[in-house]
Structure formats: structure tokens, C-alpha cells
Length: 293
Image 1: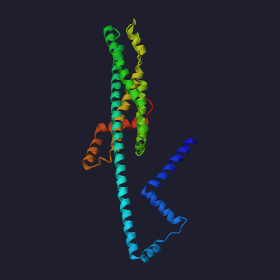
Image 2 (image 1 turned 90 degrees about the vertical axis):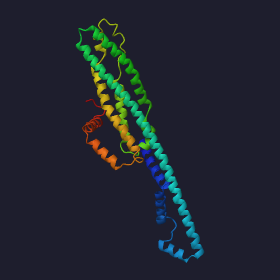
Image 3 (image 1 turned 180 degrees about the vertical axis):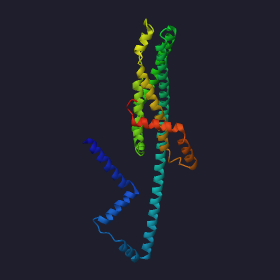
């Protein structure tokens, strides 16, 4: 019930602002009052007859007054429109820079998490195969524990970044003007949340002190979790990088218009094989978001 009321309020507020704050809305009100108003106005023919019957001085006064008012209204409308466009442009450029900076930082953390998970998977495989080489096992376990400590710091920054920062809420007014942008940002934030969820790593306490560090290490380190982390990073990295560039392009499209060189470059990029692979991954990510492969 409350949601319906809010939706109705937003619709009524939009109609009210349109009728009171735009030239088209004011013209529409004037036409409605002319047709259905309580006072019967002159018809266009009657208005012409009335104007012709006026003295020359009155005609001159009315004509100059109308020209003055019309010039003022045009100048005021043009000035207001330019000022609003400039503020809108400034706001959109600020939002575009903020979005690209945010996802650049997130992309770096994703790449670090993917490299970490790949290294841990290699170490797990090495430890499983080298049962008869305790020195190699000791070295790999020590290295894995050091990498886990480093990964904890990196992923904590990503978690803080993802929780305390809502681009959609902060820039909802400007992003709502572009179809699908807010939804894609929500998908990107969900992909970041998946990475944080799969990035929980064991403390490693007691592994090296244990009489059988190999078994203790393999017991604590879940290979399947690191596979999920790797897949989540792989899924998110391409999507987030393309998304950031796409959103920035949409927000700045009115500043940098399309030209022949840009068109030919885009066509050439779309013909590349790696572009087709990237698009397939993005489609898969969007279709199967929230599900495991």
C-alpha cells in the first residue's frame, strides 16, 4: 500500500512539475484554460477584429510590449536552459569519473584475488602430489600462509569498498535517465559480493606446528572454495571493466559525439575475435548471475 502511494505521489509530482516548470506545460495549461476556462475569451477572428479597431498608438504600444516580453522570455528560457545543461553536464562528468575510479579500484582487487586463488590451487595440487618431499611441502605451505595474510588485507578493502559505497543510490537521479544502467550496477555489486563471500580464508593456526602439516593444510584449505573464488573473479573482472567504460560512455556521450573515425574504430573492434569472446562472457554473466557454472 505504501509503495503504491509513493509511486502515485512520484507520478503526480512529475506531472505538476511538467505543467509548472516547462514552457510546453505552461502552453498546455493556457490552451486548456482558453478552451474550458470559466471566462469566454475572444476567438482568433474576434481578437484580430478587436486589434484592428484599436487606435494606432494603442496598436504600437501593444506591439512593442509584446515584442519586449517575447524577447525577454526567449532570453530567459535560453539562459536558464544553458545553465541547467551546464550543471547537468558537470554532474554527469563527476558521476562518470567517480564510477570509473571506483570500478578501477575494484578491478585491481579482483585481479589480485584471482591471482591469489590461482596460486593457492597450484600449491594445493603441488602439496597433494609431493607427499614424499617434506621440504617442498613445508616451503609451499609457508608461502601459501603468507599469501593468505596478504589476501586478507586486500579483500577487506574490497569488502569495505563494496559495503560503504553505493553508486546507484548516490547518483540515482542521473543514472535513472539511462535505461538499464542502475540494474547493471546492481549486478556488478552482486558480483563483488560473491567474491567477498568466497574469499574467506582459514587462519592457518597450528598448521606448521602440527606433526603432519600436509594433512592439516589439506584439511583446512578447501579446494572447491578457491575454484569458486577463481570463477567468481573471472566472471566479475570482464563484466565490471566493460560496465565501467559503458556507463562512462553513456554519461559523456553528449560531450563527445560520435564521428566517422569513432564509428569505424568501433566496427573494427567488434570484428575482433577477443571482443566476441568477451561479449559471450558478459551475456553468460548476466544470464546466470547468482548461479554457479
